[in-house]
Image 1 (cartoon, rainbow over the protein chains, first blue to last red):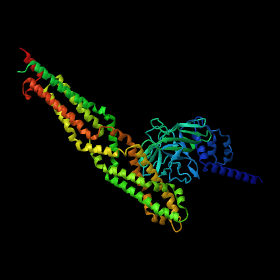
Image 2: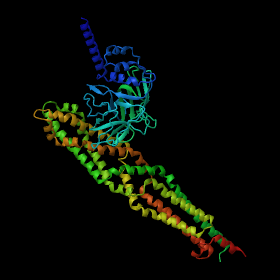
Image 3: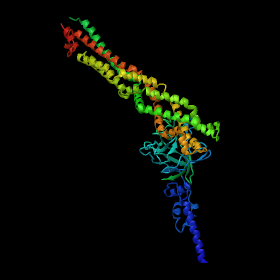
Length: 268
Length: 344
């Protein structure tokens, strides 16, 4: 009987351990990122979750997993240096979620008219060009993510893929980078509100770079350019960032890009 | 024998001639500032540089080819593709226009786009020789200094001549400077090149305005949206019609397929051209605000002739004052000789 109880207990513990491990590597980017980020959190961000989660595969996994609820709430406050990992854009009918880009026609307003991107997967509203996380997972703050050299391949598609995967736009892919010549992006949080600058945000398209930052590298905010605004969940780091930026010069001169980034912040 | 009063009068005339030459020199030196050339000329140089990739026969032919590719695709999509889809009964004509609005939009706008873009390419083609002539001129940012440097040299030599009481050697230098200024336009072939620049400015004027550039930007959006819709939606729709397949649809609509296959190349050439036009609207306006290019050679010839003539006249006057040959006075200060002659 005692042996059977031990076997049942062991089975329960093993199942709990497997469950805990599976949760730790689930497809949920939010939970993954938050857990992985924990050891590197500094300053106001305090947690005890990471060591216990890391120990999950061991035989004492079950009690450690249950320790999660007592984790001190992470505080994403002050200067946020790390990566704003993007949640990929998606559409269902005309509803769009995740990260995306839209372009306002010259002379338009923040409400449009928007340029339809017939390469957008959003059949319901092709004015949305969806963004998917790049090789770095998203936008890095405190450092640049410059475009590679050459910035375009033989077909004219942009090669910058660190922030987001190149996005097909009118048959040719644009890429995103934060160029070294300009201040690296800097964002901070105060009571769940995000603010800062992404001056260096640049879209590479059709052989040319288009600054899409806010403010512009010289500090100005021409036309429909707006401040970077957003929110961040102080506990999970889930964020939403938005801004718009007038295109000055080049083939899309006077058009305006609207950027909407969603995801989870991962501290450096 | 020369009377003292007569000598004084001739000396005054000589000084006046040299002063006039100094004034012409100073006028030449300040002309660029008066015309705003210090800010405008570099903008002209920037425009010339940025237009260079598009002012070649190869590029002009490429653009004509792109227009033909788009034209063939538009005709085919309107006459064959649309007809096949509507004829299948899957969708009616109004439904086609609604569902494939970008393609229908291109069909509606293409005649005017084609006309305007053809005019644009023709204008570029027509002005290639003019552009080459302007491009062969010295760099635009140097233009103001072609006035300032000789102008200041003329003024400096003239002032030195006045301070040395009409030193005939300096008057010779002054005359030489004047002749050099006269010859400069010929050396730089400005008499042939500058009028071509004027023709190009006149021809580009209707093209290099903001609303025209924005029209061209709009064409890019219209054509690009239609191409994307043809590639991503319309042809796949046609491929699903009874008896069709992707391969069969591609073969049935070769012009549409050609547009999609060429589109990246078109974007690669089209976008930079729009960018060059857009970025140079202000530069063009700056150049257009300069005096007519055809006048530029004469901005050198007229003051140069004036300076040379005034210097020669001043030198001859100095010789008369001395009552000697011009050659003999070259190393002598005439005022000193006059003073000697006045002594009892």
